[in-house]
Length: 117
Image (cartoon, rainbow, N blue to C red; front, side, top):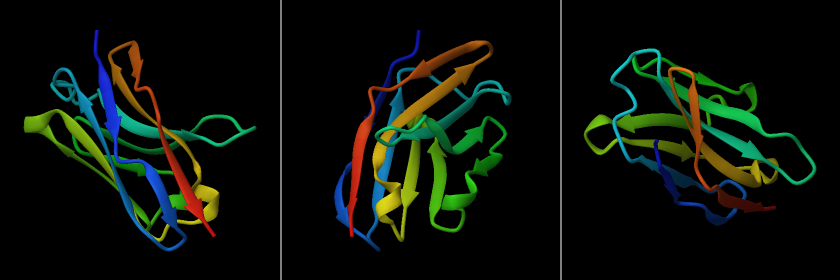
């Protein structure tokens, strides 16, 4: 089992920045194929991938956040970060941390990000 604890959400004006953190209860990246990532779900919409990073350090982003968001990790702290810059109203959503270890998948409780225009 893996517990994921998110923090860093909040209310910010358009153009502002926030940094989300996700602390895992164990090392996720012992295998290069394992991943941690961030998803988001806006009201009335499906959950969507925002950014993901694997054990080898490869990252992938949703097109709408490329150039504005950066996913990174601190292996010593078992923590993944999502730095969000130039936030837009359409980034408003609940953001969920996700971890995939082999065939198992884990989710955090979610953190609200609200961007006012």
